[in-house]
Amino acid sequence: MVYDEVERWRGSARWRRRVRFQLATNPLCRMCAEQGVVASATVVDHVIPHRGDQQLFWFGDLASLCASHHSKDKQQAETKGYTTAIGADGYPTDVQHPFYRAGCAETKRHPGGE
Image (cartoon, rainbow, N blue to C red; front, top):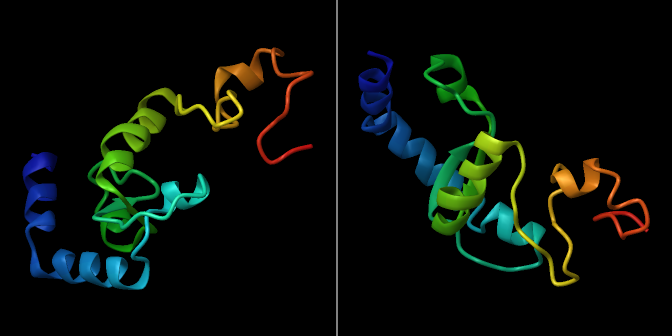
């Protein structure tokens, strides 16, 4: 089973070293930083989901995340294709959010835009 194999990889000393290195070199949550918040990362996540692919698991890019972003926003982005986070201005923070695809945002401010 792929699940059992991935669990073996996650339990290996090699993976623990990779996690320690990632958190030591990138100690802050990437998603918090994108929102202007400084928070410690506690979880290492694959930028591209490996889905049991050994090459991606061992050599794919990693992101340091806080537990909250990993368990909510990252999972949501992987399943829906966007997050539902709302910025201080009241608009979705994710440019992939349907709000920006539906034409509703034509007269609204677009994140990263004017």
